[in-house]
Image (cartoon, rainbow, N blue to C red; front, top):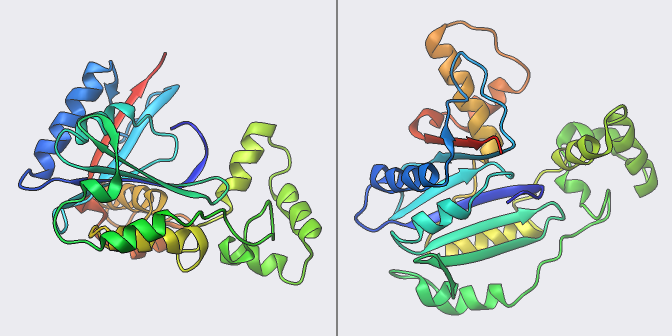
Length: 264
């Protein structure tokens, strides 16, 4: 996936397989794709790659393994490898706050409800998948004001949509077009109690995967980096956002990082 997205996760019905077994096969697939493994949480800066896979793998829960993914991860080799262990569900909320779910088995796209293991609400899954979700609200670029971060929402209180748009452009002034678009997209967060976020949670719950959308990748990766820094140097300085991330993901070090990059 190369497009901007607000949420990307992969859920694998692992059955009796352990997380280590699945991740070993993922690593083998990425090695075969000529990716280079790297550690973004170490002392040395990460290499500059043109493409990458950035994953944090949660402990297995209720038979499902979640891979929290950066939005720009190259996931094709990952989806092919994981889908040979069991049904793999690729869940995305894109830059326009439109959700989509794609199911894979043995490297091919399959019907989600038809491939789910164990007990689940088939009628509920099919009913949810039949309802198109196209985002909601119009505070900025078709995004609900509720989806803006609290500080931005406070600044935009009482402003019309054009004024909010000018505010967002002011906050990202001085950037190139591509970087500005990325930054403005990053200022928008998913509202998990409405629209795309609520739909995604409802589908995952109906599938038997559970309400496992948080912490998101950005929060997890920040918390993981902070905890690693504190391991190396207890009492190290915390930067803005660090305390919030570690509070939201206190078990971040229970996740297993999978990072690969390509220079070509």
